[in-house]
Length: 257
Image (cartoon, rainbow, N blue to C red; front, side, top):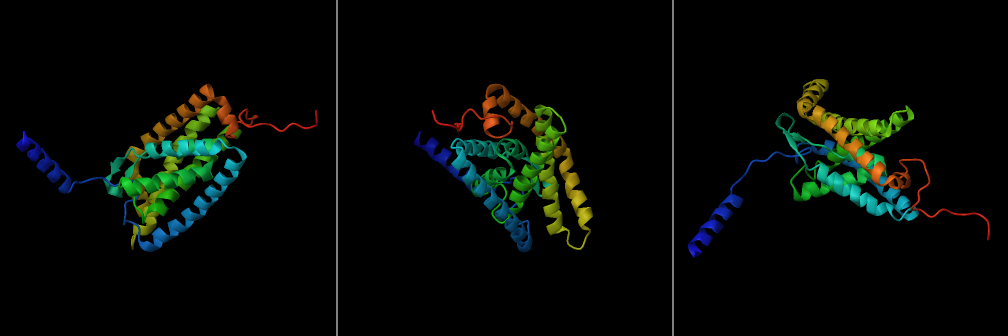
């Protein structure tokens, strides 16, 4: 019995000690040269600071808002942890969840929750990296969230139904993330070759996985929106998605009794 336990521990030790191959997710650690990593960090820090300011203002006005941001952040973390390898580009395709987040909590706060999700993934899951964190925030958090938010708002103003607008939001948010990733990689890695040629090559490498993934994320975003609209329509009103009075926030009344 003791020998069996000893053999098991030996096999476990060897399994942990032996190197294993894995596919990096997001833009991998060390891929971006220092000057490009610094540039994306500078842009990311500005938007994260903007989002933190919005969080402070909205949380002071509506106490329920901060827990909602935490819930959306957890959803973005889980959704963006589903990698599909793209070895040619040195990264992975994956759904992002930032379109859904942008609808519910706005684009600036989506940048904040994306930043937290990407930091945790870099520290504990070896997805992405610390040197490339700024670039990953720019692509997934900024490009994805602001594109999705703009598409949703413009679609609603054009008269599309909420479900159709949410679908387009999720789809274009996903595709914008990978267009931005392709731009970042091509900018840093094209060397003496043509930037446009490198950008087209990296973008094309994403197409087989990202085209269907974008459609899938559009379906998921529309489904989440419909679920909330049916089960908790007041939540959409309180979050400002639907322009009606929020029943969760006390309303000021004028005049004395």
